[in-house]
Length: 152
Image (cartoon, rainbow, N blue to C red; front, top):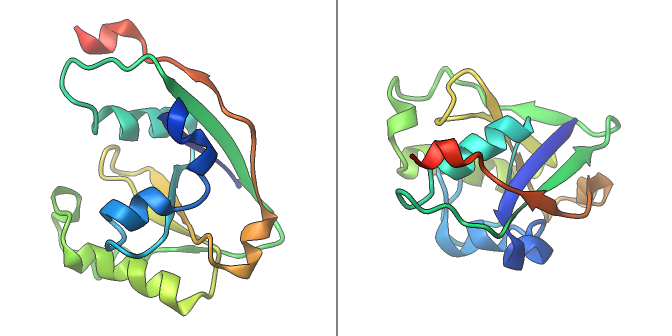
């Protein structure tokens, strides 16, 4: 399965460590839990990045990083049924618990989770502590620029 990440150039070397998510937490993980967030398309990665930008800020130092999870490893999909109906508006412990438990269980290196930015699309969580993480490949970063019309 192919995936993409977008980040600032200065963080590209750390893009596969999960340290950012460990330090700050995210929708699907608590602080202290290492997870690499990625998207199943470059367009979704762009949208996920865009919704987290400061208003009217158009950074010029973004890069995209394409990756691939080997077809030889299992990828889990989060069961949506136990999620609250408005899960996409929340960033609380009820959602973090799902990702934290997945990391601790260690059954798969990757977990598909729903996108809050584009409902119906899926993001990918990667567990850098999983033994199969060595089967996950990250390409070299390439410059990424948002279309200026997005900032009008």
